[in-house]
Structures are given as C-alpha cells and as structure tokens.
Amino acid sequence: MGTNVHPRWKLRSAMNKKLLAALVLLCLLGFSLNTVAGEGNTGTVDIENFAFSPGDVTVVNGTTLTWTNLDVDNHTVTADDGAFDSGLLAQGESFSYTFDTLDSFSYHCTPHPSMTGWVETTAPQPAPEPAEETPGFGLLVGLLSLSVVAIALRPRD
Image 1 (cartoon, rainbow, N blue to C red):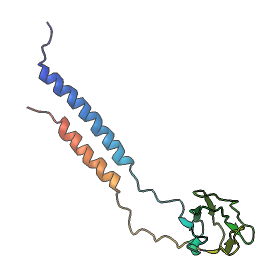
Image 2: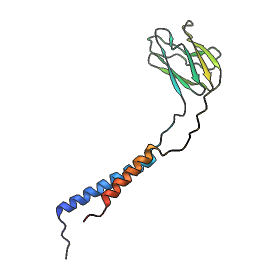
Image 3: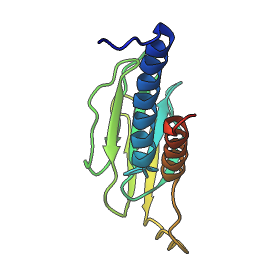
Image 4: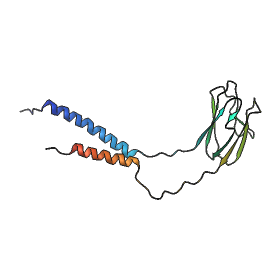
C-alpha cells in the first residue's frame, strides 16, 4: 500500500530542505568570518602638471608607494641613490616600490630634473595588546544562524 502525501507537504518539504541548506551555509560562513588585518600599508603619489603630488611623503617602513603618471608627457620615478627607477611611464601607467629600510629617499624625474620628491620611512608603532579576546562578528552570525536552524527544525504538532 503506497503512502499518499499531499502535494502541499511535498512543496513544504522541498522548501524546508532548501532553507536548511541555506542556513547551514550561513552558519559555516558566520563561523569562518574574521577581520583580516592588512599585510602592509600603501600610499599613492600622482604625477601631474610636471610635479609629484604630494612631493614629500612620510611612510611607515614596509609601505608600498604607487606613483601614477596623469600627465600626457612621459616621466620617471628615479631615486637619487639608484635604489629604484621606474623607467619611462606613459600617461596612465604606474610604478610601485616597497620601502623596507628606515631611511630618507630623494627622487626625481630623469627627463625633467626640476621634478623632485622625497620619501622618509619611519618605524612602525607596536600594536597595543588587546585587553581581552572577544568573540568576533563571525561567531555572532554563526550562533544566530544555528538558533534559526534549531527553530526551523523543531518538531511541530
């Protein structure tokens, strides 16, 4: 003897399975969410109107600076001591360099020697010690999702 299942129950059962799958994925996502701290700092310098802007920059050691040529003319970013050299940059092109030593760097544009800039690197400040570890946002999302799953799966009369 076959079991007769009302079509409405079949639909509800399929919807419950999809809901359960979505909630389980949300739980997993919630528990895996973490705040990701940046690996390093970045900064930008525009090359515009035959000038570096800003012309003088102070960055934390380990920072990557990116120079972007916004002028129609070609320019270079060339360290006076030879530490870095972009080669010719056409309009819209960029050059990046990571400053990994504590020092001061003066630089210029080779075709336009009046264009000069300066970068000083400083030591990074130590991160303050956290007073106490606290659960993150991901844990909160995960716990709320588990609660919703538990409510959705509770037996009904």
